[in-house]
Length: 560
Picture (cartoon, rainbow, N blue to C red):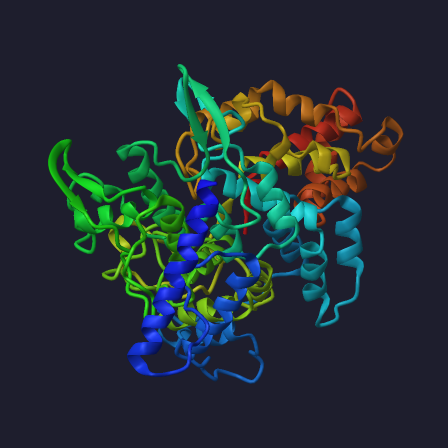
């Protein structure tokens, strides 16, 4: 009943805004802008996206660099190479490297031995790689499973409602899997997380804590602190904007975010305007709720009931005219596939830290919205670009650090990326067994093990995170060298029998290289492998030792 009343109020508020606008300019009523508060649905969200898109300025025109470069991404990137230091002509990677890179990036696991052999033995037609990308994106369940691990971290999704007496934000795994399997538009997904009027919204669950019933969901506003945390999470994940430091005082490092600006934004997620509390000292004064970014045509008035506020917040956040929403997600996609973002850090989009390629960022953001906020469209655009297919070369690899905030990036080589725990464990299973079994994916295993923790998988998602640590540590080496979990995965391998191992050790070693690294072994590698197998306790044990060495090698544990 409460929700129905709120929706009716929202409709009236939206109607009032449209009538006022018509009276002001004397023009016929036009479809409501994304800021208009009205009962929502996926179809209405799409209609507003189309109408708002017409009001946006056209995107930058891709520069003409050469007739060979037809992907706009390559045109923007190559146009900056003339400013890069030193003479260097980037080269495209070979088929084996592209195969492994595409599989890990699109479905989160290496190809099976048969898939590797089939691709490498196939024709060298110009469309070979594009066809592979389309085939991988069409593996809906595998694509969804790979994306879900990232978004579980980003949403702090837990498989329990209460942990240590503290409420979590709920379990979003099934919702995420379904959303990505059906390629739900990204703006719809975000609206479903925030807006209680969306029909596809995951309904909150109820948890009793010491006799009090609480709602367990992504938007938590049961107290002042929970509301601030919700606002900070939404800003970080969906607007790539770090506001958390402004929750109790003015941001120390970013003058864009005085405390009142953050509190005004946080009020969009609360039933009433928030009190100004500075470093735990209450002032007794409230800060009027307000969206922090200017959006032309959007109303400034904020409703006084919670469902309508959340509805309005979702519309404004996903509005095509929002200067950060589409740029935040296309930058995350770029970083996911190239290793570094067009702006860095990817969670801290700041006016004083320009993007390395601002025109490309603008173009990708517009193109993303123009194609219905379709993640697969932008992913395909990136991974079929020549820029994505360039060979890894540490001499020209771009880097980002605290002291390089305004450092230029040229993307003449992808940045080295370490496999996630799920990518690594699933790929080891494929390499050891020769088969990919979706039901055995690490995503589906809720256990936290010493090996998975050492590889960066969080034991518990108590806070949101859009990246995992990629530094090397002693505990990782110990688990890879002596851990029982990896030992069991390797030494249960059924790739070889005594007969096949004895028959041709060099061929068996080459098979292992193809099964793990997606390439054939060099002559030196075949010889070294054969020599080791010949002195091992048995040929099969020797080959399993070689398999263990390969999956522990940097070439296996990184995407390059």
